[in-house]
Amino acid sequence: MAEVIGIRFKEVGKVYYFDPCGISFLQGEHAIVETARGVECGEIATENKDVSDEEIVHPLKPVIRKATEADLRTVENNKVKEAEAFKICEQKIEKHKLEMKLVDVEYTFDGGKILFYFTADGRVDFRELVKDLASVFHTRIELRQIGVRDESKMLGGLGICGREFCCSSFLGEFQPVSIKMAKEQSLSLNPVKISGTCGRLMCCLKYEQEAYEHLLRVTPKPGAIVSTQEGNGVVVENNLLTGTLKVKLDSRPDAAPFVCNRKNVKIIKDSQIRVNKEELESLKGIE
Image (cartoon, rainbow, N blue to C red):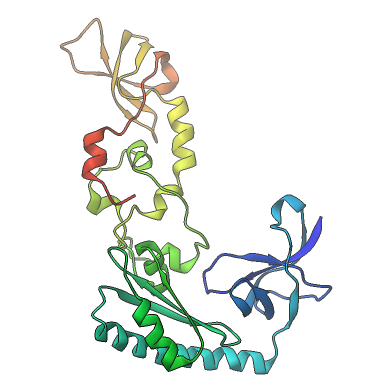
């Protein structure tokens, strides 16, 4: 076991563990720490607590100090400089005629590095741009290409549900989502209906997936062979939430499907839910 505190460096960013070095922190306070990017000021997301060694990425870096009023003023000043750097970088991008979109700019706390985040359809040769920016700011410059999900997280906005993007309001890290999840949840495989503003599959597909996986284990799938009180048949339709099944009976192949509940049938041979090649091809690029 080790005592740690959780610190995040973005408003809805990933939480990293640090060694508090015997200092007690309250949620919402700020601390100065050494990171791979240099000295940073982060917000306390998790107060002092003990965690198992398995949860820690060793070596655990120590906190330098609690943030002072002067440190917080430095953070605010950096935000002003970031806005100025954003405008200058956009001008330089236009000057060099580069096919890239600037998304965000970050100064490290000590001003030793400026990070420029951008999106682009392919690889971009920005070597001349870096030289140009370095001659203006006289510090280390790093250009980092990000994906459309990261862009949405940074910029924020409203989803089709009318609420603020999950990624920019509470999701610290992106969860993997897949076309198969949408199919298992009986959603229309229409890209417009299952993709978010970023153009990728909606993060919320993950939220109920565990419940759907349980229901799929106890509910015969379309194509399954089952035994009912009216005889054996093939499931042609199911409703996972209500447990209702429509079964085409072997004894009455031309009749309307027999409606029953999953509790009243016995599975002889279950089926599988698969995404075929045509469906994958039509949805290519949104996973």
